[in-house]
Image: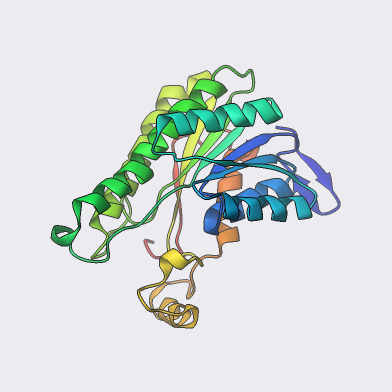
Length: 262
């Protein structure tokens, strides 16, 4: 990737096409905005059109290019259509960020409804597998290959907490899937890594009935850093792994969790 500087901003992704799933809010939206700010043309994907359109609007307001595509990553047809849409509009798929995920639970595993187990498995793990497969099929045909970053979690491979066993299992599997896929495809020019966020300033990190102020008070008492991560901080880790700055980083799982698992 060409690295250019305009003023004080480094544009590591100028004219590169980036696909971000789960881009309607939270970490996904922050990632999409960060790529656009560094010159990328961004395809934002998710199940609901309205929040995707808002992400596109925010990107276009800062002078970027974006395309919203509704899709369900738990279906093979949806992930394949996403890749086709990116290539049809912008000519390539240079970076993909598989961020779409759901959490169901909060209580003991034995009390988790089977439907909630399958919902998390289908989106958090099968969705990443289907997305990876479609993205790699495209990237391996491109002379420049591509880079993929999967969003796992510090819950799973790095730590566990009560009430999140099923979610942690899916995210630990994403970490393992990332490493295996990275070894399978690096010689084809496709570089794959993961980011594992901890508690981040999104609704998912709020406990039932908790306010943002109460979350901040809890984080100050329990996290080594004293606060949850900003979505922009997680996005910065994603952009690093997708950039040429990380050209020799293959199959890593970068934890961004305010020191929770240090």
